[in-house]
Image 1 (cartoon, rainbow, N blue to C red):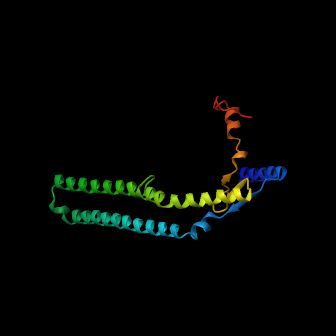
Image 2 (image 1 turned 30 degrees about the vertical axis):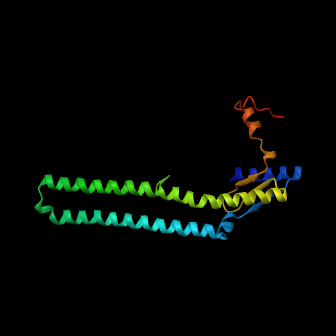
Length: 176
């Protein structure tokens, strides 16, 4: 927290010295006003509910298999009981794998959300960039999240200088 506060104060000091303009936006509010974002959210909710229903059905089937095993346990040989348990465990593993495939990192839900929401977000960021150029803003913050710069004027990008200082710069890149 102290680092963020220090960075924020240092940034304001630099801005005041050089007279650069900055601004902020609330991307959550902007997105909430966009019909295409609402459509994407509704589509994601529909898909998510469908996948959750499938997972619930798979869980019910596994629970039914357990209940059936318990009811018939006294009638089964040790080998039959072992086979049934192996089948139940296989079904549980399939369920876990399916959950991971759908809702895990880089799962179907994540990929579909990226597919539906990214074009809307790109549209917002293009508009922000246009406003920044039109209003001659050097830096744009997003108040919807943590302190994040979502637009910076490329003239104020010192990345190449830092890379050169670290010995990681492109030898063909001439910094002037």
